[in-house]
Every structure is written in C-alpha cells, then in structure tokens.
Image (cartoon, rainbow, N blue to C red; front, side, top):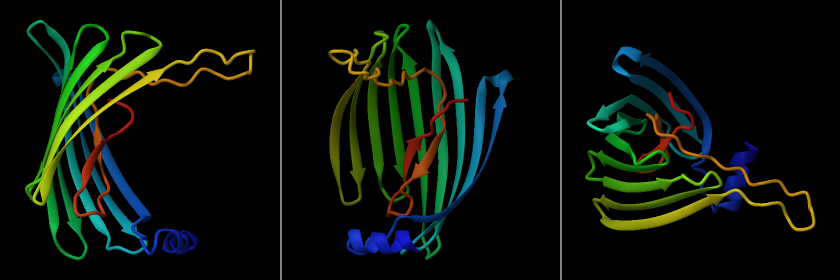
Length: 201
C-alpha cells in the first residue's frame, strides 16, 4: 500500500507498477542435439491495472555452418492473456554469428498478431580486454506507425584515479557467444516486449 500511494502522488495517478508477480520456469538441456528448451508461466498483478498471465516456450541451439563455428539461434513463442479480455501472441527469433575470436554480429526479429514487427541488428567488439563496443540499429513497425533507431555504447575499464584516490576500475561485462533465454517485459502495456535473461545455458 505505501508503494501504491507513493506512485499515486509522484506519477500523477500512474500506478501500473507491479504489485505481485509469480513465475514458474522449467528448463531442459538436450546435449545430444546441442540445444536447450525452457517453458515459463507467469502471472503479474499491478496496483491499478488488470492482471495478466504470460506463457512462453523458448528453444535455443548452438551449431556450425561450414567454416563458421559457434553460431547460436533461438526462437520463442509467447501468449499474453489479459484478465479483462483480449490476448496477444508473439514470436521472437535471434541468431548470433561470431566474427573471429572476439567479435559478434546478431540479428533479431519480433512479430505479434497486432501487426507489430521489430527488427534489430547488433555488432559487438570485445577483442580489447579492457574495452567493449556495441553498435545497434533497428526498425519498429506498429499499427499506429513506425520508427527507426540507432545506438552505440562503449564499456571500458578505467585506470586508477589521480593521486591514488582509491577508485576501483569500473566493472565490465563481456558478452560471450551462445544461446540466450529471453523473458517478457512490460506486459501490462498494450504490447509486450522480449528482454534477455542474464545467464546462458
């Protein structure tokens, strides 16, 4: 209740933030096929919005194609059932291709039954042990319009501060090729979107 009152006061009545969430996930590795699968069922309750149930099946596989080694691909199917009526079906697919020993290119696409289509291409470069580069470009299409986006980021290990101020090097996360599970996020809104889950099979 305190959180609800705070949201009412600070967000002008927007209290769509989670009140409770329940998630059950089952994952299974299939070594002989070099793949994994995961089934997830969740229920989300909000302070000032109707609850919804989410169901998702994800399949992930690592494979080789000719001279290309260590490719990874995943496909996820999701259904979002809203308590007040209505539902949304989605499919999400991504493929990651290693470029040398320390670079990676990936492509992802997400489509739903409401006419939404989102595509994204990402390039990651982590050949320098102290610096990671990411460049991403995408295009989103909805029933109400479309937009494009471009972004870039760099994560670098910083040196010690001048005069031995006691600053520690910045933490850095280095992406590794491999299958990646995804989860649904922002499912209380008109559309849900997929988000990566930290940790890989």
